[in-house]
Image 1 (tube, rainbow, N blue to C red):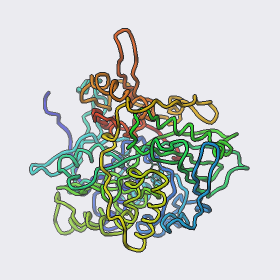
Image 2: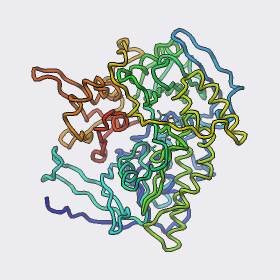
Image 3: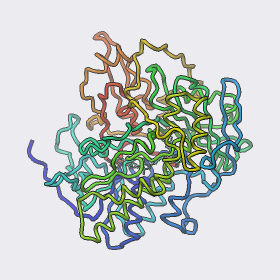
Image 4: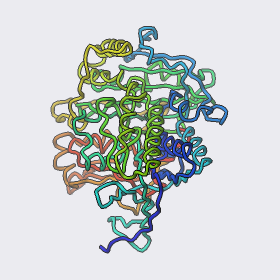
Length: 548
Ligand SMILES: Cc1cc2nc3c(=O)[nH]c(=O)nc-3n(C[C@H](O)[C@H](O)[C@H](O)COP(=O)(O)OP(=O)(O)OC[C@H]3O[C@@H](n4cnc5c(N)ncnc54)[C@H](O)[C@@H]3O)c2cc1C
């Protein structure tokens, strides 16, 4: 194929992804120097379209970035009023009192927000400062310079033929070059994955760990709504089958975020995370809350869980990884947005200093130092053993030991040192023959819903004529290896029903319904054969979340 000619545009900093990390970086760069040329590229049809997060927001990141956010009308309108933690059994629950919890678990001073709306507001702040923001622009490739440094990205390729080739309607996109490129693609970023592999950035670190988070927005009976109430649960229905738990956050306007996270290091390939979530809503405590209400939106996204010991090296020549492209979620708090914002601010400050000193395309070492030794590192270090304890010792023992460890870490020491995570989530999957299938009740259509019906509430869309963005390295492997060995778990771990094994006269066939994809990246993470690679589809495709 002839070399593709593209126009190139030059910037000081090119930022991939308009989440809290990327937008914070853009805002901070322009606060420091109004003359810097900064561009943000976002694959969602608008800023916020792909943002899915509970969310209870710790405002410390926003305080550091825009101290007068209240006066500027940031959509943080619902302060947390009460904080509840329950251990669920099938028919009942035990409330764990707040007093034995370490202070870092306290939600006092936090806000229940729509992160999609917070990002829309941050984008307005960035644009007022002169940042160029282009939604509907997927960054599909990295551009390397002569010395192997990251020089820019290719964005805005549209209209490829179904086989990936260029056709009469293909727009080749353009190259955006920067003195520095920031990858703030969130969890399992596709360009970040390439950079981590190319520069071997995970070397010497624990593997990254993940969960899959699914979320519905419900409008409930006003009599049951308690604005500002936060509830977390563990226990039923997952029991010993997998780690994870739920969150129920009462926003304003009688809306409630109901969400469920399943840690992706589960062993039993028969486990069906989506159906665990649906079953959870039939617990008497939850069913009572939701009865009479209606589900108005659905979405899913992976969440990073590896924490402090899994953060890769986050800089390479010309490029820095930000936010959840590094993995900055404080797992017991289920919070990463504050660290994403702080990382954006730190990366911007390092890039600004470098550019001012006449540097470009090198490693922003000061950014990495600030992340590891500043507020982000301190936040994550205190909780570093909680996830490995869950994985090694199960729920009951790790609740007590994890609590103890968080307490002693608050005082500055740990009895356990730093525990490792061991295997990747893909490698944790065991043969189907070692485990019993799990019998899930059929959704009732009132509290629980089948996957495809729910996916329609994510308003996801992919133009059918484009190439499938879920690439199989070996197209025969799902049927030849994954089906006999693992009962092809893609049929179950995908929360959007993208993958099916269809039986016809010719035998079993693996079908990829990529149009349903909600960009959660679970397949890229959990496929036990690591045969699926998620790449960016063309800009504007994917979910269209309202106020997730
Ligand atoms: C179910 C769930 C609940 C959570 N609850 C909370 C909570 O209550 N509180 C909290 O603080 N945190 C919570 N988190 C964690 C939080 O969502 C993350 O820490 C945070 O989103 C990380 O921000 P980010 O900017 O790094 O990435 P993201 O918010 O994921 O933003 C990345 C952006 O980049 C875009 N993008 C990605 N790749 C490309 C590309 N190649 N080209 C162009 N654009 C691209 C995406 O579309 C997206 O808009 C939760 C996460 C999940 C999954």
